[in-house]
Length: 180
Image (spheres, rainbow, N blue to C red):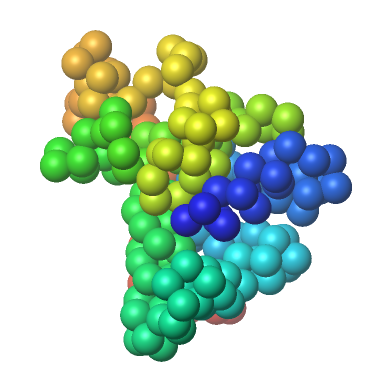
């Protein structure tokens, strides 16, 4: 997780790395499909997680990590948690302001307001690294969905009236005819 935070943080801090990482921020509201939607070099650096975890295990405890545990740890932090962060759904058992874990709200805030030279919430799993670097968002420009609901927004009625009519008709994708 420290490696992910470091690479991601630097991707927002340095011009040469922002050129690679900015493509991931094409959409301010992330989706699970965008979890690994990165520039090739950005993805290559992220593909080094197993190597970094293996080296850290060997260096910190003097023995290599079991290969199954290595892949599980890497998959959990990068794929499973990364997909959750990009869903945009807040979980009732994991409050958006959890003191330890990054939630989909923090990652939404990251995509909505974190730009070059202004990294917010670049960590993946835990907030420790962002807390240490002072890159935790404390503003009010972006608010959690649950708080927005308390203000009377994001209701089913509003969705049906304002959002749903503007959605494209994806039912055509249920038939092979769309292939042409």
